[in-house]
Length: 138
Image (cartoon, rainbow, N blue to C red; front, side, top):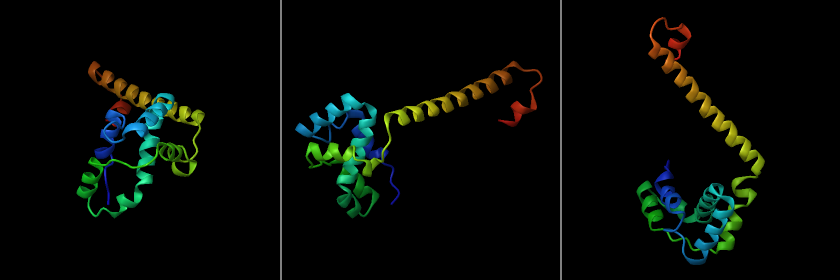
């Protein structure tokens, strides 16, 4: 099935797993979130999916998957969940330095695209002769 995980994970991300995890598991996940920040949110999410892949794969429809995950109360120990979240076999090995470099490149690409769009808009608002290069990018 093709499935948009945003339907399920948005609940996790907005409340930082408080509606899904309980007691000691939630407290340990929050400790990790305080130390590692947003990266931990994605790692914990992937770990939850991986630890429960058997039950996920048994669901026959997209609606069934949504219903299963909305009422989901994962039953795993905090040690297993966190260890799995940081296992290179699950998410691969990416260091903080490489992650920072990827973030900078993505931010530069977004900033560059925004700057080009702003330049085109400014040139078109001025009126007068419009260079062909500006018109060809529209």
